[in-house]
Image 1 (cartoon, rainbow, N blue to C red):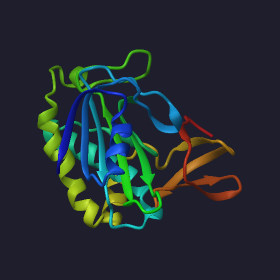
Image 2 (tube, rainbow, N blue to C red; image 1 turned 60 degrees about the vertical axis):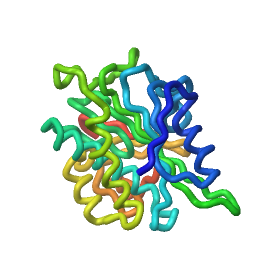
Image 3 (cartoon, rainbow, N blue to C red; image 1 turned 45 degrees about the horizontal axis):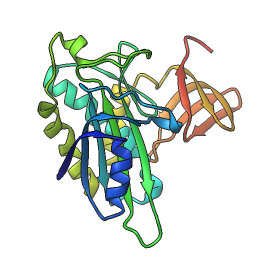
Image 4 (cartoon, helix red, strand yellow; image 1 turned 180 degrees about the vertical axis):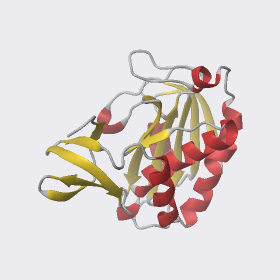
Length: 233
């Protein structure tokens, strides 16, 4: 996979969007971001010492199914950290990687489906390697492992599955793996959406990356929102 490397950028997602409109496929990697962002327009603190990456893919799946790549990306991070360091992380729907309840990494998806342009899926990944963002409940790999982490040791293992998944994503295998690493399924949750709040027990994720929640009115399919893990209902 081609990797374009930068020092400081506004945002790897913004650079990737510009490159994608030119037909680029590959990865955008930066040392720092001045305007990094997370889901729903939130800012993502990006000090030097983290891994800031956006993948530009042309998946074979129909665009309606692209949200499942959020789950696949979480699986890729979890399996890479397990293979390299024997580290067991937890996946929180829809896009967080946690260690002992603290945020280690986040994922952001964006589809580019402009008329007369090649369809592209952007997958943004922010992983706290050797620095922990200030002011948020987060943790970094250096703190966990007790030593600095070299990003070049991570990249090959992290990027390898995406080259295969772009051509054919094994959806059922991804769902099974995500369930294995999940800290969301089986527990009480509150999902805050623009149109309202859903509360109940998380049951499953489906082939399009949506979360099924057992509510007092019955099972409800949730496609987006901020998911909070509750102690009880």
